Image 1 (cartoon, rainbow, N blue to C red):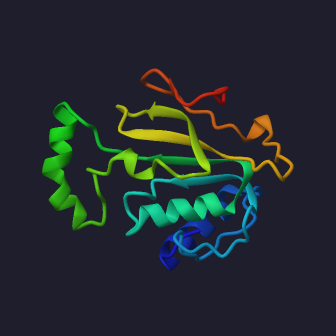
Image 2 (image 1 turned 30 degrees about the vertical axis):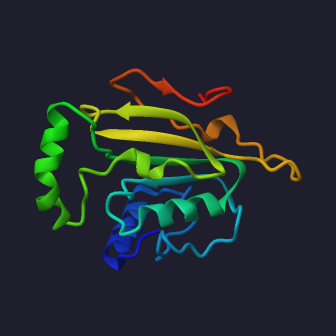
Image 3 (image 1 turned 90 degrees about the horizontal axis):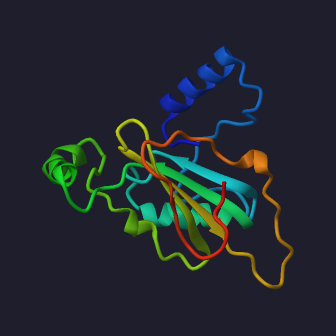
Length: 173
């Protein structure tokens, strides 16, 4: 999904050129107001979105809403550093980058604390650890049956740094 018709046209051309038969739809839609029903997907993925939308917390709420209980929300994005040389660069870049609609000083903590989403993995990605993958598991209510997420739904990513396992319970592979 995307709000920009030009980006959707590029996506359609790529799907056609590469014969990506696994792509069932390309839709014009606002990530902060998804037109899907609650609990529609076992896995919801947002790639490089959170620092370019005006209300990232609303987007995360929508991702959570359309994710089935027991399913995963996977976010890949740049998140700011707390300290060090890169943290200083991000702070200097912030005023310039914001004019382009991007926030290099966006802390991942802004996405934490959702009642039904639990962070199970945080992984630094190549190149140079500029991007981070966050994997959340949506809580299963006691009054519903769990949704089984197949092993094939797991993402395979090369990491430059150690994988950080978080939360109580078994980490996802």
